Amino acid sequence: MKNILISITAVFMASMALADYPDRPVTLVVPFAAGGPTDHIARDLAESLRKTLGQAVTVENTGGSGGTVGTARVAKAVPDGYTLLLHHIGMATAPALYRSLVYRPLDDFDYLGMVNEAPMTLIGRANFPAANYGELIKWISANPGRASLANAGVGSASHLCGLLFQSALKLPMTTVPYKGTGPAMADLASGQVDLMCDQTTNTVPQIESGKVKAYAVATTKKSINSTLAKLPTLDEAGLKGFNITVWHALYAPRGTPKAVIDKLNAALKLALKDPELLKRSEALGVTVISDSRINPAEHKRFVEAETVKWGGIIRAVGQFAD
Ligand code: MLT
Image (cartoon, rainbow, N blue to C red; front, top):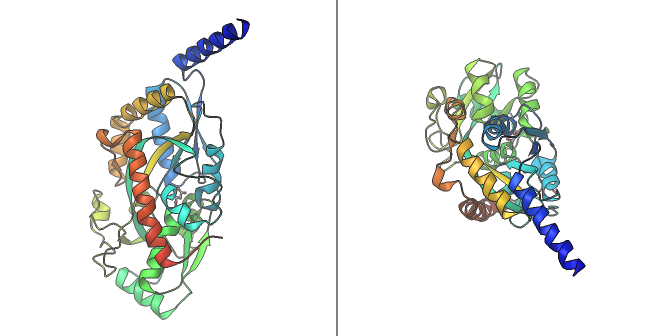
């Protein structure tokens, strides 16, 4: 009898806790250093989620190994809805890039919904001796292995773009890994590194301020941003079919209560309707996901399909991290 009473009390207490969720600040883990595109998107989203959840949403940057360190941290976190992950295409590419990934992207997380899609741009330091894409390819061809290419570590979107760019050109470059493309951008703007392929969330302000040169857009679709719309796509410039769009999505550790998942998904849908967030996204060439796709089932289906797609492409290029 006593055990029955204890378990009834426990269930009642748990349901009360769920009903009050969130009753303390939520941590949103970004698996890259502060200042990069993932960080920008997370801070924008955190501000909108603060309004829709009615609780502070604190961004925590846990960079390293192309986003896998921060992602592993959330995979192992308590599944109570107070530790979330904002991650991108790396959720689908890491399994093909790491032989010993310490988490299972499709099994160790509860999927909360898609967030947005960001194009990538190929940029260079302001004083790089190439004024446009044609001159850039001539320089790289005449100086094989000399151009330095920054990225956020194996498994990052910037690494994937650089890997496919080198493979398409059949020209090697010297890759320089950082804990995020925020710190990488600082080195590019100061001329310490030559090139980088990064998301428009990070590159548009630097391009528009003249701190870096823009050579091409890495999506086949022209950008919604007027500055980027003037650039050739890599597909137009000769790398037929070159097309990378970096999508971002929201995750919780596997085992998070369904009532919490439903609350978070509802809060995400509302947050992505925030006029301020929509305005900032458009100015940076980022497309916010439509309401019908912001659901756990569609999110999971999409990542499963992307994992198969990018796995085949990466294995064809034949590079593993470890
Ligand atoms: C990446 O290159 O994958 C990340 O976007 C880098 C970052 O967000 O810092």
